Length: 267
Length: 287
Image 1: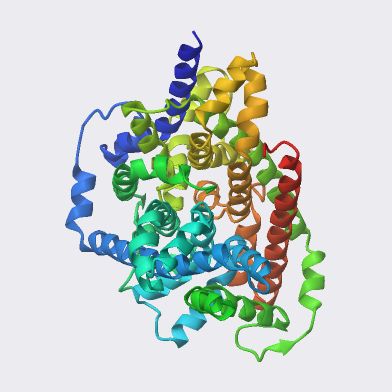
Image 2: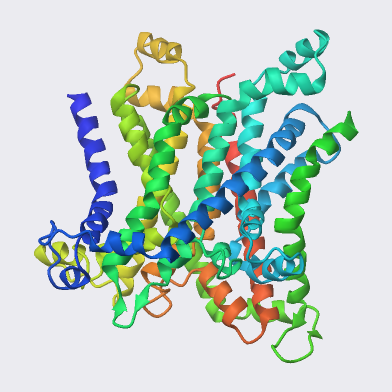
């Protein structure tokens, strides 16, 4: 009886979770006129016209690639910087380490809206504007503190004695890092990378400010397909469905990491 | 040893200075000036700040923001915990649930706004029709109350999965032996939850609360697309107001001062919550 109640609750929750998504997918297979006039639960005149429109137009395709480019650069940058930093915070005590850690975290709390103008000026001066690096760097604002935070927890979950044993056994620091340490924190890196991907892929404000014509990301293209006769809801919803796909694929691949990875350490 | 620690921090510090520290200093610098396009910046010390504190729109946005954050936390944390407790513990069902939970998290934020706009607008969506059937006149474009709770429900929809994932991960770390011991002692399900599960979830819950506080304070794209801050100012949150002032406003220095006050509020709130939560759980933590 108890199990049935649980399943029922879960079903209810997933219904709530999927209903808006279903509605969008439903709309994406209809023409805009049908969406505005009929509003039925199933597409009456099933059409893939909207998807065709997206795949035919170069703007959509290139902005999709643009987005993926800066997201991947961001994830790589963040992980490369966060792993040693998290190691330092977790293994060594040094003057002001607690304060530095909290200060790093405060950057996670910084609202992106306030950085738009100064970032634009800074990256323009560095000649980074309209390259994927501008957005990739800007997204470090919220991703780097989060990654350090997550990884610090993971690394603290690995006993310190392990490091010492490795050094006594005569491993150099570099060898220890590569052969012993990295394989152990791999789930942590997976989880951190997942979150970086998540927040970088979904962010709009900085991505919009820091990109020009050459690097327009998908989230921006999505907000700009207002035709002469108003929003083209059919195409917009189809594009919305397409932006969800990389996320779904990503989740599918790291599903085991989510369960196991989180479970290690104290997160 | 100490020097090595700093060496390890160099890459992170370079990234932080490029993405956070230098821009932040620039904002602080702006906030001390009157910056009107086309004229020379004028140093005015703290005048912009004095103006911010007397700005009724800003105070309204702050009040709304706190209200929103607390409502969202009150719903999302317990609901997330509840769903995490209901999840199957292993197998195909679990994988399926996890993938489903990941979907809302990985949708770009403006698309989240769009999903809900398509879902709830009278000309596009199905929600008004559903409410009409039970005799409620649902109009999120005109009615402040409808717009407000549509935004709250959207945020719950969007972020409960994150809380679920975090709580689920926390639950995985509790050894089965604890539950067996509780069962042998004859503890009721509620007592097991209260004295075994909850204390063990402390760290995870702290992270969930802090992340949700930070992010709900920074909420921008979703309400911007869903309601555009309206009707009137009823869903005009702090970030929407700040960015409208920082970019569209007459005096950019004023927008910058708003930003600094805004960031100060977020950091203070997170600090208070963090200290509070660390102290609340302390007594209950087993060993």
